[in-house]
Image (cartoon, rainbow, N blue to C red; front, side, top):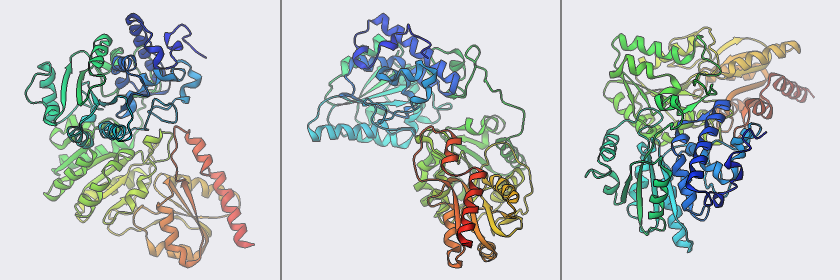
Length: 591
């Protein structure tokens, strides 16, 4: 169902068609692209501001260069929607019935014009330097272009890439899309210097790119397609690395996105006419607020807390902390590695850092978590959100944090099942001084219940219901799934034991070995990948007893925008499927 049969985009099957357009037609296509980005994101959600700002630069690239012979690498490819439309994938924006046929990030399986799945920031320059070097080694030809921006320059990998690009001697074009924003406001001294460069039309002597050994040109209006075409024509075929510093407007073409760039970096479905949410936020309580309320209480009581985020304050609603407690808040921009080591420094010298990390981004700081935080025992507290099996892109899966973090020595990775347990864990984590503590924030509606302890120095699994034959162990969010499974088993005349293990990283050996002795079967439920996860740890513990363990969770695989209901079916995570598998295993044991 093409809603726009008269659009020029219907006739663009690839870059060759872009080259045939007149300047007026290029302006028309730019308007069409913006309209479709807004229309699709309004329907299904997506990255709005970044894509609206990069339209003219993308049109100019495909007008001047010969993709895929000339190669473009998109940094955090949430800026690649216009590129997708110009490379044969406009159907994924023109036709609402095909919105899900085009993934939200670059994807080499979709098109020969894409070369990587990229959803995490700051990698494009390093990738492009590697591609350029390979081109030279293998005798290929063609330009290599890296697009970086939208805050990506704040990531350490970006600076590593620029540093190494500076010693390269060959064709390499770096387009720095400077929209003066990250996900939130940009932070750090580097961005002050970039402001000076913009204000001086690129003439300021303090120039990061030149300091890295790179040629440099400034383009004041990156949202003028003719200007961008001329700039790219000038550098096409260049024989050395150059940075084009391009000034653009994030959110261009949609007034709400210009007025509130942070909110419109990525947006859930909305009403186009006024930008209001299609599903307005309700006044019901949420776990973010419960955490912020407790931290606020501690700050007001004089606790030397420092709330830290790496450019994702909106994920946790941290603007409230920034406004109320500016001296206790720090957004380090897109620098997860720095955030961990910075927090460790704070902890060593007597402050109490609380890191807020999105599960999929936390993996970027894995070495710092091991080497700086865990190895040194300092009591950094980390809140991890969106650790779950979800329908996100393959670049943003959140189901690996349990295996990644629970296997590191010295770290206690706690998995609360309700609000009271969450607050109890947070209070203990901020009081103890022996180790880093990570808390996996529950997802979904707030559940209330009991926190049977305020001291997690020794992990004690909580037996919520005593039964026989089968023990159901539900970790964190999946404790609620365990309750449903227990109820279904009861309908089948099986009275099961239900256990909250409390921690993903420390097993209550005494309790679980007794459970193994007193039950025919143990079932583990975790909202995460099973490979290296909680269930495997428990299985290994009880294996010598001979009691079998059935593990339920995600398989070891990349998934790409697959509905959660489909994944649950695939992984046998519905109560009915689990009960069927349990009954089959009991029958096998009794045969």
